[in-house]
Each structure stands twice: as structure tokens, then as C-alpha cells.
Length: 406
Image (cartoon, rainbow, N blue to C red; front, side, top):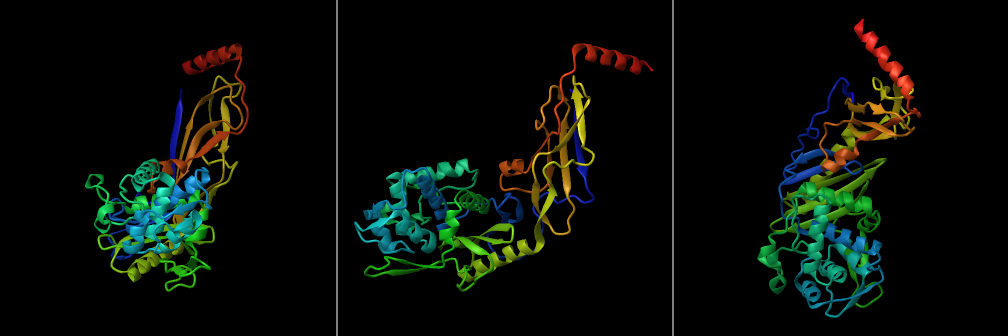
């Protein structure tokens, strides 16, 4: 079977590894990603596993929301504080001071986790989903593998290091709590794309725990880039901060302006202020330098690849078209690279049948191979072509034979 495989280059080819930019972020690692496609727009040391601190809680959020979706738990379930939760309520860094045997709903605990990064609330959610934190950690690592997170290891639901957990510390055999900036971006993207409700809660600047009860606790979101907080930035509506001595200051942020949503990760910043300043530089760089462009619309033909060969058909050529709209993130004033792959097909052929594929901007880096593959769009048959009769194919073969002689 004759193969027609072509690559058409327009004027200027994009660089192969995220567009260069000298942002001088002064952090241990950083990444900026288009939330829609998973395309990497900026990267700095993104595959080095580092302590993620409370950014770990993005995985706990994912698994809690998944359990709610699967109806194994509900928002209104009542969770009674265990000895571990009571311990974290006294010594667990950011916390809502859960009392021993205190009962709270999943919804209350989730808000405390997502808004205030409460470690005691987080651990109680983990125990509610999987009975024990140890079992929950197994779910975390299994989900990480399924999501394509190659440089992560979870040992707690909270991100707290072993040396802060006294008798509740996980065994050394489980290794260390680690996550790369790439993996944090993968997790954030999966969380907000799969469960948009996560942003509704994460974007809450302030809330009250134990509302209307004795000793209410005001929860001020640790994401100080939200509206009304100290480092407010246009469009920011998530997602998760983190700090431990080993991790430094970390932040997975996301912002939407117009039809563009970006995800940023900074790890190892020197201070809370620094992590927000670095995030601002990343997000502003993305919004100022990139735009969404429509490269083709459903039904369009690609110049130079309007048709492909047909074998054993009543017609010898098949018109092909793009199966769906193609919109992609591009750097402003850049020209596109386009790759088209078409294969000769054998009749009979049905209209709409996949014949090949087209990819724009194929040289760019993506978070995962899967994201790059998802950027390919089908080329499909624009009409039906019936199979030619045996007599027609015989006469065609004879004609081609004699034409070849002369």
C-alpha cells in the first residue's frame, strides 16, 4: 500500500522545548502550562523530585472528589475525629483544632483543607475515604501513576514531613514525600479539568469553621493572590500553597483571563512573598506572550493535502477534510509548524472515516506524551467511495500496464 506521509513547514518552526524566557525567578523549580492542552510554556528544573509540602493536598482533594462522584461518600457524611486527627489538631501546623471525637461533615472538612490547608481536616478525610491514612496513601500513589506522574511519592495525605508526626510517622521504608513541578502541574490540571467544583472552593478568600457555634475559627485562604487578599492578581482562582522547612515556600497557582487558563508551579521559594511574586511573573509572562489561535475549522481542507489515493475504488482519489476545530496556544507573532499524515486507503470508504491526522505546533513540549497525542486531530473522508467491480479493476490494471510501457 502506497503511503503518503508529508510534513509541511510554514516559514518558521517553533522551538522544541517551551519558549525561552529569562524570568530570573530564583526558585528551585518552576513551570507554566496551558491548562487546556497541557502545553509547557516555561520550564525550569521541572523533573526534579522535591518536597511538595501542602501541595500534596491536591491529590487528597482529587481522591475525595472522586469518591463523592463515585457515591462512596457524600458531602453530608459525618466524620468523627480520631486520635491521629486530634494529634494534628494540636501539633499539625495549619489546623482547625479538631477535638477528640469531634464530628464534622465531609463538606466542612473539605473547605478547611482546600481554603486553610488544615492538616487535621485533611487526615480525617483520608481516613473517611480509605479507613486509614496508610491505605489512603496507597490510593494516592496508585492514582499518581495512572495520571502519568513519574517523579512523585506520597507518604502522607497532608504533605507533613515524617519528623513532625511523632508516633504517627509513616515507616522509613515508604521513602520521602516528593513531587516534581511537572507532576504538580499534571495533578493540578487533572484536578480542575475533572472536578471544576474544586476551583469554586479553592477560590474562596475567607470562610468560617464552626459557623454559629462556640469558638468559630476564621479561615483566611493561604493563597494571597485571590481577590481582596494581599497579592491579588487578575484572574487567579486557585489552587494550593505549601511550606515546610525542607520544601521552602511552594505554590501551584491557576488563573483565567478570557479564553486562556494557565497553571503555574513554583517550588523552593525563599518566602511567602517570593512565591507569589514568582507566580505573578510566570502568569503575566504567559498572558502577555501567548494567545489562542484557530488553526483550522471543522470541514476545512489542508492546502497540499486536499486528497489521498484510493485503492480498488470506483474513484482513485478521495477528498479529505479536518474532523474538528483546531485551536491551540501559540506565542504571539510566531508562525506555525504543521504536520500532516495521510495513508492511501482501500475502498469501500465511508464519509467521515478516519484517513490520517494533522498536528499543529508538533515540536512543542507537553506535560505527558498523552497530551501531545491528544493534540493530533483526525483527517476524515469527505465522501463515500464504493469498491470498483473486478472487471473495472482488471481493465484499469491492463491500462496501467500498457501506459507503463510507453
